[in-house]
Length: 586
Ligand code: SAT
Ligand code: MN
Image 1 (tube, protein in one colour):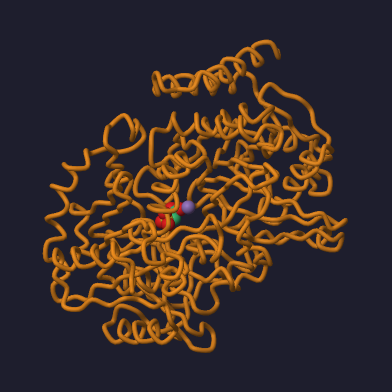
Image 2: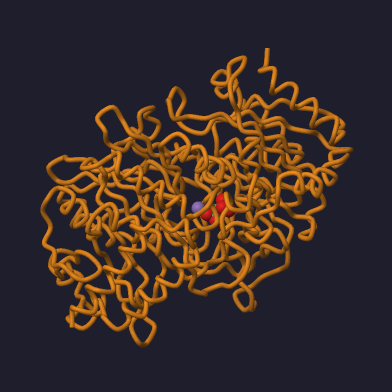
C-alpha cells in the first residue's frame, strides 16, 4: 500500500499531464534492462561495446540542453526577501499560473514514470525520501545510478512519511519554455523542458541542495556543495575533510586523488565518500558528521584520464551513461584529454569529426553518470548511516591570481567569511560567461535555496553551537598562473601535499606563518623542494600581495554591502578586520 499522500499526488499529476501509461519504478535490474532496450530501439541511446563498456550507453542531448540554466532557475519562496538577492524569485501563485499550464496534457502519448528514491544511506537518520515523476526514461536511467531508487525508498517512506515532490517533463526542449522552479513551502520542484543533469535529475541540486538547504536551516544542519574524502596517514590515523568548489573546478578529482608514489610507499591513502554534495549534522559527541546523499557520480568527462583521475575512469568503465562525449566507430567513447585523438569519431552533435575539426568532439560539459560503488577508492564507510566525522572544511575556487595555494582561516567565524567571499572563474557547467570572475559563496551561489545572508548567519549559528568541536576552515587555489599563463602548481595527485598540511594543522602540527589573510604553510611544509618548485614560483604560490588584497577586500566590502540589513555584522567585521591587518602589514 503506497503512502496515501503519494498516491493522491500521482493521481493528480496523471490527471493534469494525461500520460498513456503510469509506471511505478521498482529500481530492479529487470526494469532498467527493459528501459535500456526500449531506448536503444528508439534511437535515444547507443549500446556501447559489451566488453569494453559492459552495461553502458551513449546519449546525445539536444544541442540547446547541455548545462544548468541559472537564469531560468527559480526559488518560489513566499516572499522575495526569503529568496534573497542571489536567487531568481517569482511568487509561488504566479509561478504556478505560469508553468502549471505547460504541464497540461504534456505527457499525452508518453509513459509517466514514478520514481521513489532515497537521498542518503539506507537506515541513516539523515536520509530523506523524494519522488520524481517524469516522462523521460533517460531521466529514470540516470536517477537509478545517482540515487537509491525503488523499494528502499518506499520502505523508508512507510504509509505516511514525508517526501519531496519533483515533477519533471521533457516538454519539447524549447529553451524559452525551460523552468526549474522550487517551492520550498510545498516541498515541491517543477522542471520543464530540459533533460540535463542538474535541471532534470531532481534529487541532485534541486532537492539535495536547494530544498535541503532550507530544511537544514530549519533543523540545524548543513546541506553543502562539497566533496567528502578520508585521508589515512602512515600511522593509520584517518581524517575526513569536506571541500566546496564550484561546479567543474575539480571536486571529483580531489575526492578520488591518487597520491604520488612516494606518498603511497610511505603509507598515505585517500578514500572517497562523495564528490559533489554533503549533508552535515551534529553527532552525539558534538562533532559534525557528513553523509553523501547521492549514490553515483555525475562527473565532467573532458580532461578525465588515466593520468588525471584513474579512479574516475575505473568508476565509469561499466554500467555508465555517457552524455555528449564523442562516439567511436567501435562503440566506445572518447573525449578531449582522455588519450590521443582517434582518427575519426562522431561528435556530441552527431557530426563526423576528425582531429582536424575545429570544434571539440565532446562538449566541454559532457558527463558520465556512474555508480559510486564502482569507484576503486570508495570508502568502506561511504554508506555509514552515521556519516564520517569532519575535521576540516576546505573552500576553493579557480583564481589565476591573488589567492595563494592554501591558507587556514583564523576561526570558524573567519572561515565563514572566507567562504562567503569566495570568487571563482566561471566554467562550462552553467550556460554563459565562461572564465568571468564571479562571487560564489561556499560554491552555493546557484544552489542556496534561501537568502544568502541568512545562510551565512546559519553558518555562524551552527559554529556557535559546535564551539570547539567545529572543523578548521581552509581555502585552496590550485589554479594560480605565472605571467606567461602557465600553472604554478602541478595539482592532481600532488594536492595531497596540501591535504597533508591541512591534516597536520588540524592535529596541532604543520609549520605555518601568520599573514593578514590567515595562516600560510612554509614552502617546506607543502613540499616545494621535492616538486622542484623554485624560489620565484614558490613565492608566487604563497604570496599575499597587500595591494592586490586591499583591492580584493574593498571589492568584497561592496559585494557584502549589497546584502543590506541581513548581512551578519560578524561577516562585515571580518572584512573590516582584514583591511586593518592588510594596512598594518606593510
Ligand atoms: O549539472 S549538475 O548541477 O548536476 C553538475 C554541476 O553543475 O555541479
Ligand atoms: Mn556540483
